[in-house]
Each structure stands twice: as structure tokens, then as C-alpha cells.
Length: 370
Image (cartoon, rainbow, N blue to C red; front, top):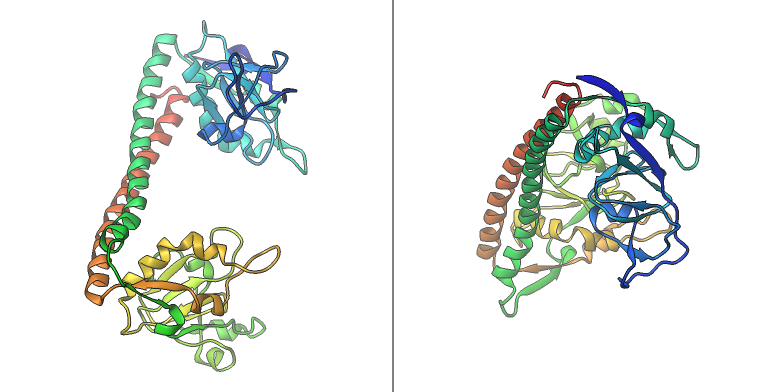
């Protein structure tokens, strides 16, 4: 096999914004493709023939923005100004073989950008990238293998989506038709507290053996250990308090995905002030309430208050209203959820293996080893 540069086997076409756009399909108009169109979340339409056209056989690649280097395939229409199209010379390269190569180079291309404010893809670098180019028949064989691996990835993703939908569906099935279900605010059924941060000016405070939880460690899982540990002296000289196992922690601060996430203590531990600690109570089953709060993630996040970085606070958490079926039903629901989470964990490990296989096949394919 010989190595070739991309400019030897394809043409780079830069996208541009059309003068006329419509959110509705009009006869004769073609889709206008943006980054959002890669996953099907948005498509507009245009009839501007001066706009850059792409075919289904072209590899589309993000040329501007934080996702520069991201590739997609199988689109036909017009491409926006943040997109470029690699049009293959089909006498030399299989269109899908070209796409798979570009897709495999995303991490590298994303680091080879120009521009301080808005990163731009280094197109000169892109077009001088080299790859092994076997005969077309061999390219198609490799594409077929990669398609099978991609199909496995898609199957795993669909299974994960179904598992995410299972718990809310189960809740609706078990409790949706029950009448006169009790509801209560969290603060009415248990104590809700928070912690603190010992002074960083006293390094010795962080040389103890008492676990100290930060919000980054509250990640929808049982917490069995912490990155940092503090001393009894640190507790005496701060707002820290030791919470028992089965305490539910809820992250109150964080602009990214952190705010609203929950975890359950599997050990006795302290926390920082950004965690709400919902203490165990005979009023409810801990695993039931934890599952309920996990299902309420988006709702909890929406309750954040503040300007640039909305946060939750103890008052919001205490006043959050929850449904409380009889304890026996709470425990039955929690048992089902635990079993479902076990299946989900197994699926996650399987997905990791499939992803590793796919990435390995991509690397081997374009190193001439597949």
C-alpha cells in the first residue's frame, strides 16, 4: 500500500451562508446543513444556488468553532459557513473510507486550530495529512468491518437510552394510577444540612483520615472514598459535620452538569458547603428518595438562583416536594431500580469494550494493519 495526502484524493469546499433560508421544506429547496444537523437536531432549507453544495458522498467537517475537526457523512444540500466538505475522487478513494479516516483524526485536528477567539481548522494541515490507500476493493472491505463495529456502538447506545427511560417508566407504572399518594417537602421528613471548607491556610487540616466530599465527587453513585481527608481539628474550626452512611448528597453549586447531581454516602463523611446533606430518616426509604432525586435532576437544576452561575440552596432543597408511597412500595421500587442500575453498569462496561474495539479498528485501518 502507498501513502497519499488528502489533497491527492479529494477536494476541499468551504461552506457559506445562503441569502435565503426557510425552516420549512419548500419544493425544490435543499437542506441547509449546520453543525447541529450532524445529529439531526436542526435542518433549514434554501434554494440559493450560489451557496456551497454537498453530496451524500462528501465528508463534512466542522471548520470553525470548538468542535473543529468533527466529521459527518451522508448529507446532501448546502453547507453553512462553519462547515467544509471533502469531495472524494471516487476513482481513488471510497467515500466512506475517506470519512472514517477524517473521523479518526478528530482529536488531532481539534488541537491543530488557528485563531484566539474562535478556533479555525488548519485546512492546509488537513489537506496534507497522509493515510494508507489500498485498492478500492480493499477499502470497501475495511469500510464494511468498520460499519459492523459502528453498528455495535449504535446498538449499545440505544440500549443505554432504553435503560435511562426504564426508571421513570417504572415509577409511572407503579405509582401513576394510585390515588391519594402522600407528598411532602424534603425538609418535613428529614434534616437537610450542609458542610464547610476548612481553612486552606492550615495545611495540617487536610492531613487527617476523615473523608471530605466535594461536589465533583457527587456523581450519581455511592461514595466510598474521597480525594481529600481532614482532621478532627479541622471539623472543630469549620462548619464541617460528619454525616452517616445512607446520607444523600445533592450538589447545589455548578454551572456545568454538576448542579443537581446526587450521590449516596456509603461511609461516614464530611462535605464542603456546596453539598446539601439529606440525612436518613424512618419517613422514607433512602434508595427510593435517591432514585426520585436522580429522576428530578433537570427539575432541580432549573430551580437554581443567581446571575451568571445559578445555584441551589438549603431552602430550595428543603422545600422540594416529593411523592411518598407506602414504605413497602418504596422499597419494591428501589429494588427494581438497583437491579436496573446493575444492568446499566454491565451495559456500560460492554459499551466501553465496543468503543475500544472500534477505536482500535480505526487506528489499525489507517495504519495499514486491518
